[in-house]
Image (cartoon, rainbow, N blue to C red; front, side, top):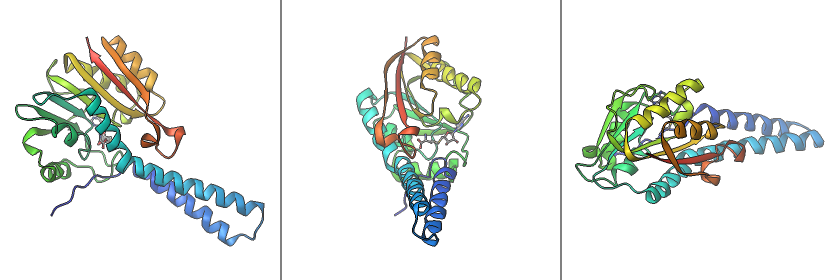
Length: 239
Ligand SMILES: C[S@@+](CC[C@H](N)C(=O)[O-])C[C@H]1O[C@@H](n2cnc3c(N)ncnc32)[C@H](O)[C@@H]1O
């Protein structure tokens, strides 16, 4: 039986953590017992554990966050949904599983491998087959900053750890305004993201006539190595 390929988010980050950690630990083994050796062990372990926590968030924590959020926010079976920066389909398939035709979800992405390893439309399409949701999902190669989609088309728009990848800030803000543009009045925008941009997102959404229903931190399931790189959810409704 074919397996789903999920990819690793920002793969260079955990690889760097693990490499640095291993270098410090090997150096510790080669160093005679003294205070310096203890420091090497502490830094080495810190980096190795940070890398493992990062991988856990990418492979397990993120999925748990979205299961809970989609249950809380609710997706109606006939909803039209859009997932911005869908990558391998971690959120896309969770949304699709809540839909029955004519309910559909569209996944938009530019398939950047630096943001998620081995990212491609073909891999995501194959994943959707394995999940058994292909009939309710369409994939679109497009930039979320300029969506080739009509206004007020969707009941739900999701974005999972994708908007922070859009740079610089002005483009990120355009992506947020695009997300609101394609939402129907009363439609839900669900963003899960990381970085120090939560307040900026809230400001842009409020200015775009979106009411923020919920905004909170997400705990260990959203730690990208540790609490210093935490995640948050913003749940907004278009007026
Ligand atoms: C960290 S990955 C997260 C993927 C997926 N949402 C998930 O949670 O597994 C970020 C995704 O955003 C996509 N992305 C980055 N900039 C984008 C843009 N301007 N337009 C569309 N997708 C973009 C990347 O290609 C990547 O697939």
